Image (cartoon, rainbow, N blue to C red):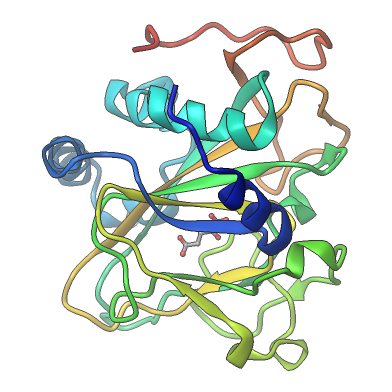
Amino acid sequence: MLKMGSNQKKTYREQGFLNGIDLFSDDEISGYRKQFDALEARLGRETCQIGLVNSHFEERFVWDMATDPGLLDQMQELMGEDLMVLGTHFFCKYPVESTEHFVAWHQDVTYWGLEPPEAHTAWIAVDDSNLENGCMRVIPGSHMQGLAEHSKSESEGNLLSINQEIPEEEMNDDEAFDLCLKAGQISIHDGHLVHSSLPNHSQRRRCGLTVRFVKPEVRQTELNSQKGHWNPVLVRGKDAYGHFPLKEHPFPLK
Ligand SMILES: O=C(O)CCC(=O)C(=O)O
């Protein structure tokens, strides 16, 4: 089991995120990147930008990334023994052509319909992600401040599913911390943490795979932002609650 230091757990509790955790070696991530590139060649950029939702049910490599034993060890350290993968979603920002795509300031759990509204996300860098290509940014400690009012973004290019945002005038960008990552590294953030990302002004793609985790005690009380039901899969421990229909693993765990 990969052990996380008590300092990291304290940081996560206090700041609401961790950054720069090594997960995959250069060889491993370049293998996964090749498989993503092949998917992109097959499906096209428009789909791959934000259209790949829950592809771990169809694509073996996405399942392997999302359930990597080292990742599950880390998530168990933060969340406890019993762990479900709630969903996966690629966020892929291509170099700006006409529209500048960005992700507006938001808190994940606002529109996920979960009760209690608790979820944690691992963001796996498929490509290097930094200031030039629009890495994720977070407001440290903002997960402690409750849920903010979200409205519709007025700027074109917001990649969020229902174009939600915490209005610009309520945000102070000076407080933002940039989550620069090398490919193969991950960040982890609390579903209450305020975060966003700026447009990709480089000539490189910026692709990350988000893996959302919940504990089995969570239930879905409203439809999520895609107007649907979640299909979580138990990946560690046990489900003593049965709040979701039991979902089989699409592929064996490593
Ligand atoms: O990848 C990004 O730019 C944003 C990701 C995000 O909003 C999320 O993980 O909830």
